[in-house]
Length: 274
Image 1 (spheres, one colour):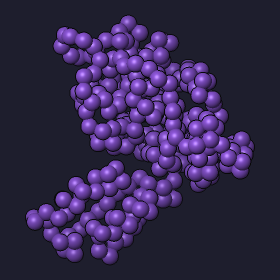
Image 2 (cartoon, helix red, strand yellow):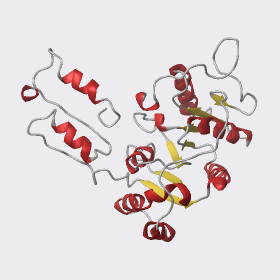
Image 3 (cartoon, one colour):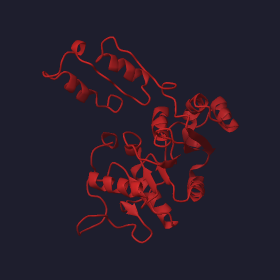
């Protein structure tokens, strides 16, 4: 909660008149990455704290086989279809940076004969829950998601995570990769690296790969040495669409009454729901 901007809410809870003082209560805090800034903030709520960590703090899960592909923005779709073709009916989560990219990409994949749904912060909670239910049941074995699905969700048997757009921070990368390879299972994570937009991530990615005993591509080493473009994600533009994009129904709104399709009003920010 601290890492996602809920510091005022945490302070409200621990400062409530009915809450015992920090010297007379037991407080446990958990984080998948625990960056230093959050550690410092957490110490305000703790007395004589002890930190326990599994593996290297902030590292990616070593049970996940990570692969970084050097792909231009315009080649991403073909590479994604190649990966999805190899996975068959296994569950695959595809992460993008923009909400409109999620809808566009889900429709595109569905047109290629792979049933796909999407989830992002402009969907009503009911629609997001329906999308997750379709994904869990295998009705739609592929889900395209923004940061809304990177944390707080435990979905069994996610075989593969694809970073269609790399996130802007390596901590977010670790959270995304952590959607697979859970509870001792093995998983795969593929990431599309575009030199024009992801140059700032080259060194952090090398560090993450090395810490989890993954292969570091030679070209990524060169990117780190000689630099690339600025950081950040990207994505193809695109219109809205349905919650689930089956080949016989994409473009229509799911589970609602009559009237125009699409989604009327945004819900809470993407980081607010997990």
